[in-house]
Length: 94
Figure 1: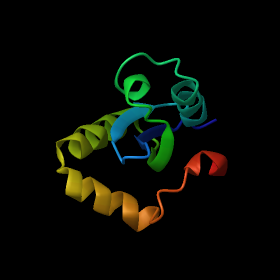
Figure 2: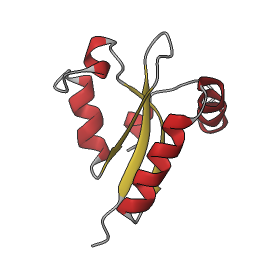
Figure 3: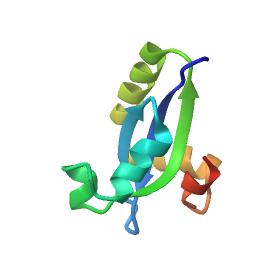
Figure 4: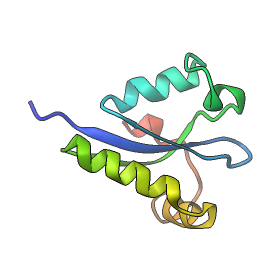
């Protein structure tokens, strides 16, 4: 079975953004929603999955995560809005 890697963006009511990487998107989002991950997402209640990309290769996913983290906030918001204009929680689509 092919393993997949995900680069994802979480947000909250004030559109604070968090970019992460995982091999199990459903589990990672669940952990953020349950506040099991200490740090930024727990502190700022960043639990809404608003964007993700799928990769077959972990190095490609890591490279993409680093690229997105360097982007301006405006550029990140444009990327999210193209896929998810209403910032709907995509967790239910997984």
